[in-house]
Each structure stands twice: as C-alpha cells, then as structure tokens.
Length: 151
Length: 152
Image (cartoon, rainbow over all chains, first blue to last red; front, top):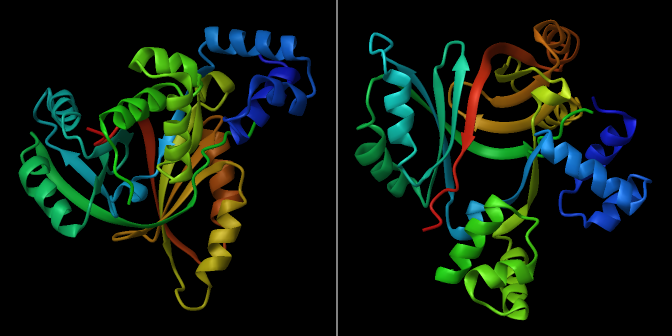
C-alpha cells in the first residue's frame, strides 16, 4: 500500500517528470536514498509504468488533429480485434481508446493539413474493417493536458 | 519547421519509450558520443519537438478505478464566456484534460474518479454546476493505447 511519502513523491514527480532524482527528493522532502528506494518499489509494483517524452506534432508540421468516434458492427464477433489490429498499422493514428457508452472506439489522428487528412481518411480509415458509423471531431485547442491524478 | 534526420528519429523513438535514459546511455545505443547525443536532444527540446515528459501511472493501482470521457455542449453560447467555462473546468482536480473541439460537442473532458459513485459526485456537484453547461455525453474508458506516431 502507498503511504503519504509515496504520494508526496508521486505528486511532485507527476507535475514535473523531468526532475532529476536529487531534485525530486529535495521537493518531496526526503533523502535521495529514500526517494530512489520508493521509486524503485513503485516501478516494481507497476504503479509507475513509464516516463515518456511528449512530442509536439505541430513543431513537426502536423497542423491537424481529428478525433474519429467509431461505432462497430457488433454482429461481427472479431470486430474489435480486427479493427484495432489494422488501425495500429496506420502511422498517423496516435491513440486508440475503447469505451462503454454510445461510442465504441476513438482514434486520434494527426495530419499535415486538411488535404493530407482527407487522403488518410479515404485510403486508410475507410478501409478499416467492421465500421458501422464514424463521426469526426476537429481539435481546436488543448486547454489542460497534464493528465495529473489528484493524489 | 525543424528537419529530422535518421538519428533524430531514432532518438525520439527512444525518448518516447523512456525519457529517463541518459545522453551517454542513448549515445551508446545509437553509436554516438555523449556530447553529440546531448546536443541533439537539446536541439529537439529547444525547437519544441519534445514538448515535455509524461509520467505514466497506473490509475487503478492508485485508487482511481474509473476514467470517463465527457462530451460537453454549452447551453447558452454568447451569454457565458468560453474563458469562464474553461477556467472553471480546468480548476477541477478530477478533470485531467480539457480539449476544445468542433463537431458534435464543444469540449471533451477526461475525468478520473475512484469509482462510479465518486464519478457521480464529481458530475453532479462539480461539472453540472459549471457556468453554461448544456448536454453532457459520457463514455466510460475501457482500454487505451498510445502509439508513437509518424516518426518514420
């Protein structure tokens, strides 16, 4: 189980995952050795799954981000598996989520511009299997994206 | 816009996988000197290609068993300023992401809660009290995978 020290370390680490081990220990008010030991344990227990660089696709010339909300033909027993397996092969798909609700799946797609998006949509998306319905939402702005847990 | 060569792309792939790797460890993997690796990473950060880092925590193991995506439509456009709504919604700790979108909804929110009854509390006491909120559609997240994207 997690105690207050673990939570304090995670709180600081979440807000700034680029902190060095020494900086993190100092902010969480623990010794470097304690901090390292706690982090090792949190990793071993699978609480911390990773620390990833976040790419800004705009900086690489990808100006368009579209969310595709997909409803699948559930009379096909392998609809989910077949669909996600093929969606993974499309390089411009950066996120695949599945839901319980009105929507079955959501794909996040990035493209250089609308023309490029249209090309991806026609050649790669519409050929995915077992689609019953698709709805597209365009991203305008990301106002909060830290994905921090309220620990 | 910054041009990337093959080594930059390899570096990006490595850092997306694990951003805590040191320049010398990455240099050894890619056959580069430590200073050369460091210079490339610095360029990727300075040019904004690497926007930051994200700690991937297992929400469930930390007691957050439910993640819900909400599509929110504003009811009284024009009367409530978007800024007021955005400021208020971003201040709610359970709301992890706020995205302004075009289409069926105006905003998409990612909300974490301990369980369904905790989610109901957040929904009723916090989200439905926000200025200008109209229709809300909820979809409970079952699974999620992030892919590296077109790095090449």
